[in-house]
Length: 161
Image 1 (tube, rainbow, N blue to C red):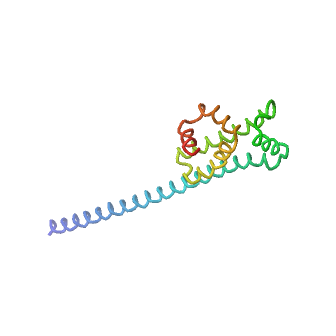
Image 2: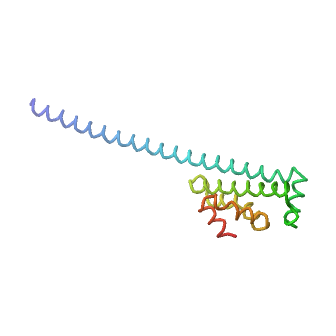
Image 3: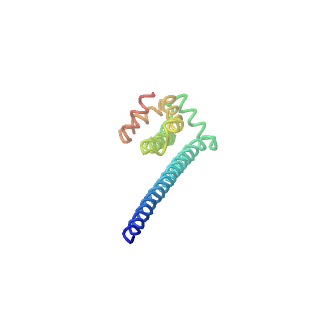
């Protein structure tokens, strides 16, 4: 009878051990799932922050035109007759275009890193496309600085021009 009782205890201990293993596996699965959910939330937060930062950068460029009547007039003059823009005026306009193009390069970098979707990238780059396409000075600046930019970004812009 002792042997039979011992076998029952051993079977009970085996069942309890098996249940403990199953419970542990379930707990690990729940932890992994929560970790994956947290990682997804972190990724989305990064994407949102990256987009907000880019939007703020582009807004600052646009606000230069909106808030500074003299500069807005200068850009209009540059677009209508680029050959009349020289000296300090030419430098101001060229640097403006260069800043916009480099902001686009940053947007493309964030896209490559997975922090920005293609739709958001295209939304951000719309101002860059317009500046380059609609202006001889913009195209001149683009051609002048494109060798210093990410070649993937340059190809992306050139394919759309």
